[in-house]
Length: 350
Ligand SMILES: NC(=O)c1ccc[n+]([C@@H]2O[C@H](COP(=O)([O-])OP(=O)(O)OC[C@H]3O[C@@H](n4cnc5c(N)ncnc54)[C@H](OP(=O)(O)O)[C@@H]3O)[C@@H](O)[C@H]2O)c1
Image (cartoon, rainbow, N blue to C red; front, side, top):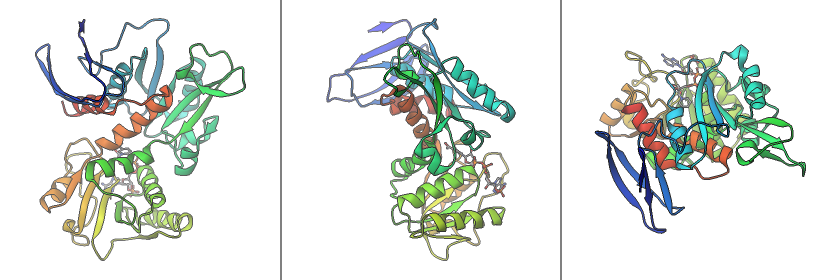
């Protein structure tokens, strides 16, 4: 069935569909659909097609960051929202750190469904939300806010799952980044962190969340290398205190590792140096190399690792899984990962 520019495909339960769309002269990516409902909504232009026009019932979600113009989240989230048939829109808003408190309060007052937070807000928000979910408490950062309303029975429920909220509204902070890295390592590198030796580059916010999550997952050894060595030492000390079973240390390992994970910003810009000293740790000493950077598609680190025979992955899967988990929380439904990945790839790589 075709209506306007949107395509609806009926898929019998138990079957799967592979297709390439050619619409409006554009050759869109291959969709892999795993049916759970009997029909899927396929947006014809992944980043901008919705089930209907914006109206008085349309609900809003947004990502706050500074800068934000580069964000691929609106394309990914709007594709997921459309596929779920929700009358929601996902926006990107430039918010300065000093305005974050007011911007969160404003979204709550306007009954936004929720928010994503990116650089530089993830740590700041820990002290600004009304309640913290266990995930945000454990990993020490908030990248997703769910607005909840108190109902007549006294329970707090997500606004995105309520037709007409009447009670007071509160903000609840979650972290979906930490689980996303483990999920993406499994899917994109086929590596199971439990019992692994890991060399982690970086000691910023993303590195800290990854280090804590990998330690919690039961890695055997965690080696931490950072441009500012004192930060790697502090992070190693924190891991040792919280996860005594994990051997955590600052510096390069003297033997091979299963996972080399780049959580630095080195590689984002052309001409950036490699984030590690390959004299101290040759890349053929790693089975798999994961770079959290996803733009460019292949950083100099990934190119060198591929040439050295390592299996490699960029960070697109991490971005996908943190976003899909946020949409799960807002909607109470299972966000369509395949549709969201296709939209993300289209937006980031064209
Ligand atoms: N794929 C995803 O979904 C995802 C999610 C989050 C983050 N990321 C990526 O992860 C990276 C880190 O993000 P973040 O939020 O942790 O940032 P951050 O808190 O600002 O930390 C930046 C880290 O990079 C290091 N660094 C910066 N420039 C460097 C250079 N030229 N050489 C070596 N090290 C350098 C810093 O070292 P110093 O301590 O010495 O300054 C620090 O360890 C970014 O590239 C970001 O795009 C990806």
